[in-house]
Image (cartoon, rainbow over all chains, first blue to last red; front, side, top):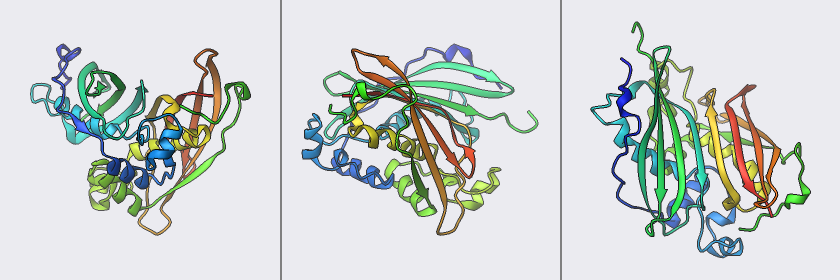
Length: 150
Length: 144
């Protein structure tokens, strides 16, 4: 069944702050095999003009996707998560995420479309730091594939 | 922000150094832990096949992370990336052997966007097993 269009524009409450740790950034950089010193060496990061080590561009997804769980698991919306695939992902950064950041995410349902029985959900996550400054916006497109025989 | 590439030194069509990134089952387990995405389609062959996939597939976000490395390695400062977006068109299929799969990434400057902000748009192509695995893969980068 198609998702309820009246959910478009709905904004969920900001998440509790996620504190970005140097070791978590290091773990992520190692996992993607990236040895850029800006991710692990505070002096190298400072030489580039940053105040501490920064996170790789896609690091923040773990935080925004976790926040999108509010939308995905909203029982009123009724998305069948077992059929969901990740369609598109986009980020627009005001500045890189860095160690010591305490980030909150505010998720909004930007669009709901139904195409050939598939439900397509666009979620925008606005990420702010503790001072309330914008850090990054993440757009996540999820596609819930039509059930067989539906 | 200190990019090592100067805005004046690039033109539309300028190619970035290409790179290839290997991915094995072990890579995926490590990425699952680092990212917190433990969806079994990325490590459990039986489960992946039950939901209709040919085999275990890499996390789309892993592929996205590898593809942008061509840009961040080129520009030097990963903080110079101001926008980055992709479409997940085909999965990267990772067989259960020691070789795994290869993600092959090329990129070129598609347009100079803003002379004052010194930004360019870079278009990225990511291939695996002869198939394009990302579509509309673009980054906006501030150059020196």
